[in-house]
Length: 105
Image (cartoon, rainbow, N blue to C red; front, side):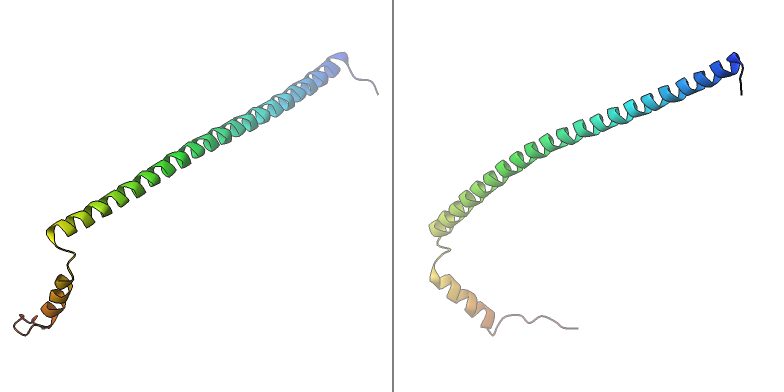
């Protein structure tokens, strides 16, 4: 079976166009894959930076908490709030008879 040269050229042209479309699709897929890989690498770098920053902030918070606790103990000692008599007084306050009773209703 013979075909005309124009028909042959048209079929070859279509095949070439399909082949070019396939190459473009593969190239686009590879470009997308490369972009995703790049974005993942950037995200991992950002995550590592954030982890390092959070660790530093947690250490700073722990240091400031220790400092505040030390200052609070020093203040309590200076004004006498750590005396054992205060604890005994707090127990007496809970049991006193002249204390106003809460109204239930």
